[in-house]
Image 1 (tube, rainbow, N blue to C red):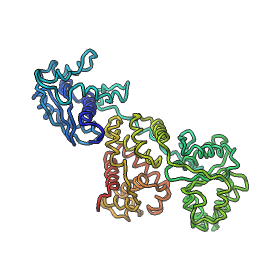
Image 2: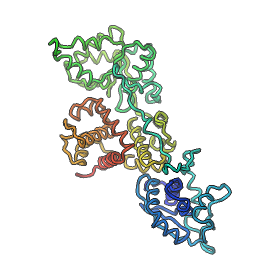
Image 3: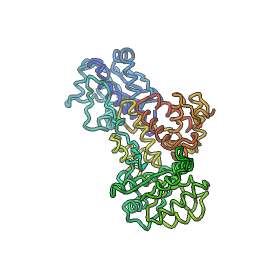
Image 4: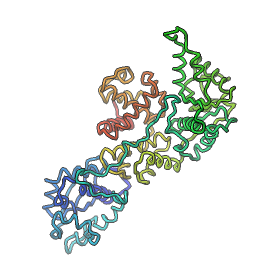
Length: 525
C-alpha cells in the first residue's frame, strides 16, 4: 500500500469508501447481497491486509464465502490494481436494525445518518480504535467528492464503474505528408513559462514574418523541453497566416537520407537526382531543421547544407534550427557554418518550473478530454521536474491504469502507480534497456535491433523503443539509429502503439510496468 503519508486508519477509510462505491454499482449483485457490505467499518491497513469490522458472525461468514470473490475484486480495483486481503473483526453490536437489502435504500435517505462510534460499540465498552466518526471524516475524498455531479448508480446493463474516457481522445501526432509538420503542435498548445517565454515570443515573430533580424533563429536546450513543438508551431502558424507559404520541417536524419538518395542514379535516366533535391530545399520559404547536431562530421551532407543555407538566406527565406547545444558548441561543424548560425538570434529553452509543469499537465488533460483531479496533477508536477516528456509519460501511466481498472484517477492511485518512478539517480543507457527487454522476452539483443518481424519480436522491439523514449533523453532520430538505423517515424509509430496499447491491453501495461521497475531498480542479471 502506498500513500505512506497517511495513517493506517485513513488509508483504510479511503480504500473502503472507493470499494463500497464499486460494490454498490455492481449490477451482478442483488440488493440483499449489497446490503451485507453496508455497516462494514474499516479500521486500518497493514501491508496487504485491511482490517474490516463487521456487526456479527453471519456477516463475516457471507463476506468470507458467497461474496468473497466480488469483495476481493473491489478491494483490488480500489487499491490501484494491488491485491488487498480482508481480515474481519466482530463488533458484537446489537442486531442489524434493517435487513440486508433495505440498508441500501436507508443509506441513500438524507434523513438517515451512519452509525456513530457509540452505536457501533457494545454498551458499557470502549468505542473501537477507529470509530465511525473517523471514517466519516476520512471519506471526504471519495469518488463522489472527486467527481461531483456524477451519477454513480450503474446502469443494470453494464455493472461497471464509470470509466475515464481516454482512448478516443488521446493527443496523437497529425503529420502533414507534404510539409512533415505535426498539425497538433501549435502556439496555442505550447504552454509559456519563465523557462521558454522568450523563445516562444521570438518564434512567433519569425512565424509572422516580422522577425527578419532573427534569421536564422537557433533554438537550443535539452531533450523534451519543447524545441520540436516550437519548430512545428512556426510552420503551422506561417501556413495559417499565408496558406501559400512553402514550409518544410525536416530532421537532420531525413535531410541526410534524402541527400544520399539524390546521389543515386535514377533508374530511368541514369542521372542523379541532386537537382531535384536542390529545388526541394532551395525553393521554399521556411526551412525548419531539427536535431542539427547529428549532422556533425558528415562532411558531404554539411557541404550540401551549407550551400542550401546560403541560398535560402540570400533570398530572405526564413531558417529555424533546433539543437541540444548552442551553435558555438556544435561538434564536427566548420567555423564558416557556425558563424552563419550565430549571425541570427540564439535562444534557449530550460526545464519548466513548477507552475509551468502544472499548466502543461492541465493542458494535456484538457486536450485529451480526461478528468484528473488537481491534487494528482500537483503530485506529478512536483515529482517529475526534468522535462515535459517525463510529465506526459507519468500522466499516461496513471490514466492508463485507471482505464484498465475502470476506475477514476485519484491521488492514491497515482502514488501507487508512480511510487517506483519518483526518484532515481540511475542513468539508463539504450543498450541496458534493449538487453533487459530481450532477456524478459527470451530473445537476443540482435533480435531487437535486427530486421526480424515476427510478432513476438515486433512487440518486444516496440516496447524497447517506448522504454528508451520514456526513460532516456534520446531523440526519436537517435533511438532509430540505435535500433538498426530505423527512421524516426517508425520509432514514433511504435511508441504510440505501446502508449495506446497500455490503455486497452492489461498484458502490455504489465510488460511495460514490470520492465520499467526492473530497469529503475537495476535488478541483477
